[in-house]
Length: 306
Image 1 (tube, one colour):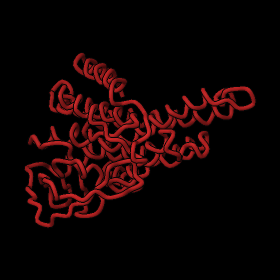
Image 2 (tube, rainbow, N blue to C red; image 1 turned 90 degrees about the vertical axis):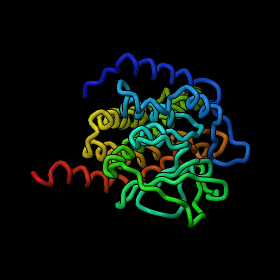
Image 3 (cartoon, rainbow, N blue to C red; image 1 turned 90 degrees about the horizontal axis):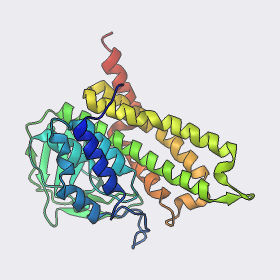
């Protein structure tokens, strides 16, 4: 894949990088000892500066949205960016955000529902949206590093949108692949910082070749996830979208295993942020059928008629 960001995209990603390193993004344990922290400051900054609308700009589009989702998913704090940046521009409607997304099911726990202003449902019947009011959603306790909730208003007014369900589903595959790839990179960055700082036998852990080799292998497996996701966002092809999500989901279990090997029990404690990325990954890797479903889908799209 040949990728060179244009002038607008370079400016967008440069500004995003400054925001991602600024106020409201730093790691700190949650006040209620849960596994997630919602950053109002970061969400408000991105919203007020139009970042969630970047995907609607002709010079930016889905590829800029994917790069943005990937960068934000590397942070230890939570915001809802995937649906707002990737799906909303394609719907042709200015849905209020945050936006929760349901796929192929009409009940159960859904991430971001507790603070969502709108919910999307993507299934075989098409794409439907509903606006949410106080009392429509019940927040659920969870060990996932996302705010989770369920809809308790059986009379919620769903409205069918004039949108291609297949295209919206493909865009959601790309968005989830970007989230998975970003979460794995965020976890890897945190572990690399740890092995540089933590000493054993008088040397930093990262000075041992065995550690270096395994982290290098993790980085090598991880690198294609970013580029596969950008390629899918650039081509907007169903097979590319399925490959991006299928491959990214397929390596997540091994990546999580490797990262935790270097953290010991600290990786699951609330004093270090690694648990946030790994619990997000546990949730995301089963979205839209997970690795097997998406890789089979890619094979069908590429070779079914060959």
